[in-house]
Image (cartoon, rainbow, N blue to C red; front, side, top):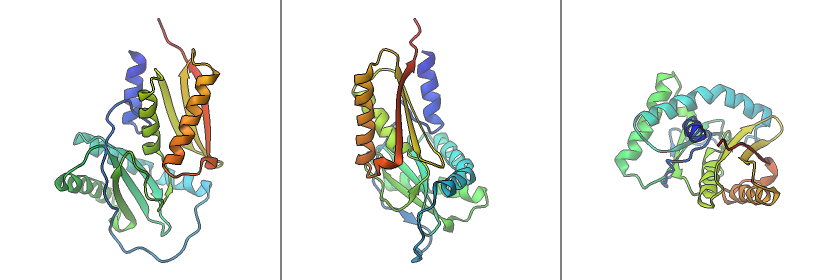
Length: 218
């Protein structure tokens, strides 16, 4: 019971959840013209700087959307023109008014923090479909949400999933219960690789670590 509560809290904090997966396809919404200037992909150290700069914003947008009882995954990335893409993945087909409401909430959070919307791109998409490869991602919550759901469907029992970006790589950490043997760990590793490929990302950029350290208390 304690583990389930921890998982639920963890998902609400944008790590990964056991419930509330969502779906919607929509084209990116742009608030300024695209720049034609070609910019090289940021280094991992530069990405860490962006993460530190905008983590507070992601937290505030997540909080604002949860207050309105929306189910979603929120990710962000850096576009070639240095804009920040705010990527919302939703589970069900939403009507026009719902889409507009979500956009308004996000814009209000930007304005409340004295951030000019012209430097941001809002994108709404289907949770189960790959995002357009327009930005260098700063998080992969949509990918891991898909992986989490797939592992639930395949009855892997109790587990946890976490991810982070370091100066060297994108790390995915999966923790299974102690009775899961090496064969099952390899299956989960392959499942994670397949999910990364499904979302059109380069597996070589990821480090996948599958452990079996979760203790089940009697």
